[in-house]
Amino acid sequence: MSAWERISCPTVLVRSADGTIEAAYARLMIERLRGSQLVEIADAGHDVHLNRPTEWRQAVEEFLGGLR
Image (cartoon, rainbow, N blue to C red; front, side, top):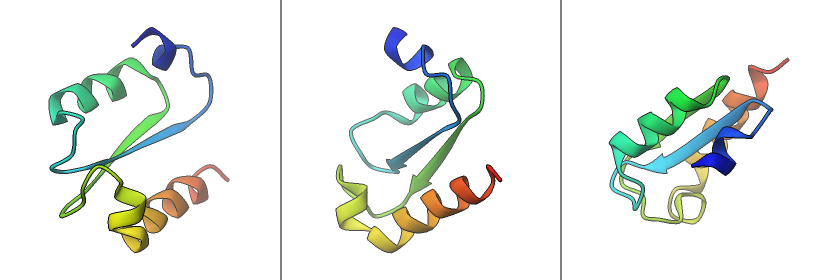
């Protein structure tokens, strides 16, 4: 996780609620990176952006919109 902790810009982690990144691990990632945000999307596989593109795009747009 050291590479994750070296990120120095606001970051959003979008994960599938039933994906390959464990929920507890995703929460730990968010706790360790200041300025990061976690968004979980239900009913999506590993490729959230392909399986649920509308929800993925909304999550990314909301995150980016909050940076203004």
